[in-house]
Length: 294
Ligand code: GUN
Image 1 (cartoon, rainbow, N blue to C red):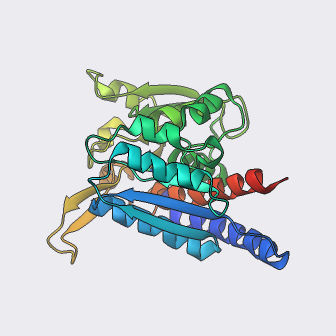
Image 2: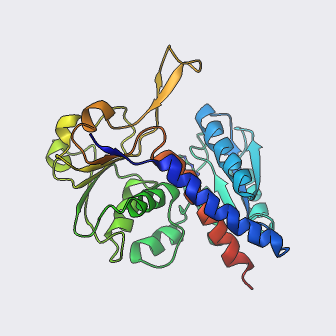
């Protein structure tokens, strides 16, 4: 039986640490960290994510605002709103929830965000700094995975980390983070993806397997080495007639099969997901400190 990595609990610890910092700021009469989340259109999953982010801000005492824009908005008008918040002193972090409607170029939107407020860590300059090991905003999900491994004292040094998935949001940044020559990293990293003719050949080599594919139950028991650590990044909505909502959330890992073989595993929900939000708050606090230090 594997040990469950309780991301919900760790995320609560991080939020408690941040709320103590906010109490200090309040006691000293300082302005508070602020985050604006821009949501375009009415994608139900995006609404859920943005509301969770805003609720988490309130929980730690940050200022937060959701700006809900019509899905017919032009790219220019969206970028104008971003520029407005770039210049707004109350908001230290700007998040534009993805995906955006067809016709809006995500690359242009990301590049419009002030690098100092890039709490998602998606700006090309943040990405470049991460790759070469400079101080940077780390994308929240990979940052959350690193934090989980650290807090559970899971050794990464010299271990073989195999990542399934090569997205800009998870696969590529987690590879770069774990490759760094420092404590909590220094791993041997392989990224594999859908072009592999036999993914199992790679996944079976993993001391730490990170599944970020976006396909429910994709990683089966026979794809995992005995005693591996398994990190499930998947958030897949599947129909569930027994649930009031009509759906449930499951991961990329077939939990029942894999947990019998591995040493540690993150559940879905309650594993990586809550950490993504906690690290967004960490990044917002960092942006606030950098922007207000003079
Ligand atoms: N859509 C899916 N994941 C993310 C994320 O981490 N940040 C943003 N802005 N949009 C997303």
